[in-house]
Length: 186
Image (tube, rainbow, N blue to C red; front, side, top):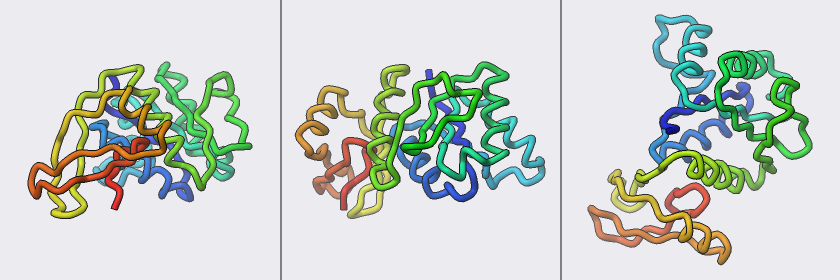
């Protein structure tokens, strides 16, 4: 079961990592990051090792800068060394680092990153059971937990180019969700 994910990325890709963390949060998956800011009493190396060891999966974000990053490559090396599940997100046109070149990545274009996040969540759903969805209401700002939409419903929404619908448990307003990331559409 995948409940914790380690996001490996270079500093320049912090916004992509934050967007990924938000998408994982929506489906109740905790994420660690190589730039994790907490537990300052521990060295960065200890925080990285802890994050990778405690995770069920590592998701490296491989961009033009990320593929050259010593930190990203070291994190991948550690994950490979402990036989961790690795699901790479790779920018279109970029070659994977040698240690994970044999893997099937999820490719993305920067302008369509949400599509890749949708594919990632779909793949994680096929590997593990995802029951719950966290939603922050765009109207009343309350956070609620609901059952996640069945995969068939998500597929239909994606194919039709439509959104998913739900109702806020607090203010009772209709909320429309992006079927790729499960984020509310303003």
